[in-house]
Image (tube, rainbow, N blue to C red):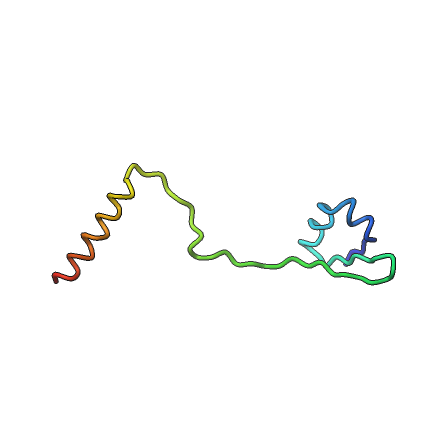
Length: 75
């Protein structure tokens, strides 16, 4: 665990955050109160996928979807 004063943490925030990726960091204020910084693990959404480049227009995509829905109803 690494400890910084408030002033040190403010002056070197980027380094403090980099350290906090690997170990807990404490920041101590002048009045003696301490605060802990730990990384928050946020899992990415399964829907967060990169886009693709295509020459298909929005209208063509919507027509294809509508056609697929019509063929499902007819079956």
